[in-house]
Image 1 (cartoon, rainbow, N blue to C red):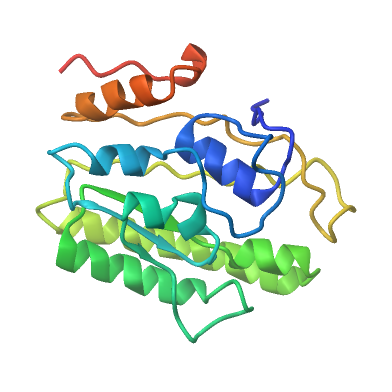
Image 2 (image 1 turned 135 degrees about the vertical axis):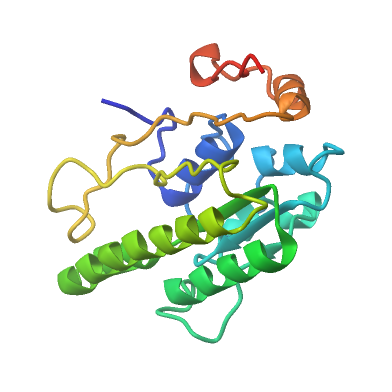
Length: 220
């Protein structure tokens, strides 16, 4: 069983813990649009010369820019669109197309992609739409992977880390179909070649990160 460490069990807290490697229950207690005080691995990567201007984020949920604190980090976060399933969530198909466009035109070395329709439909008790969105997301991930396998810049040199914000819960009930719980993936980090500068900056910036969350740097 894997668990997140924060005690909030909200999407903002889950994404922040996953991306920043620390919990912050004192400041993060709901999903409101507030600028995150913690620095994400994307922001730390952007500060490295090897990754400067080569880090991007594409998201369906319009709170993601605040979790990444795009005002402070100046990270390019693509999240706007008139094509939406709700006021806060744009269509995942738009996010897929924007992610593919980003890969083709900008060739980022680090790209964060967030889909959100399953979460939206789960909260609103729309079971068939939830299943359709889950199936659709599987296909979207396949499309992203297949693109990377035919682009010489990414082929044979790319890792996908697929996770969720904090887990889908242990039983029905609670928030419609999904009773959220601590069950989820513990924040772990993929570190490939040329990421030592991110690793060092991260350790300095967040010395409180438990060592059990960190993966050792590859030997090569």
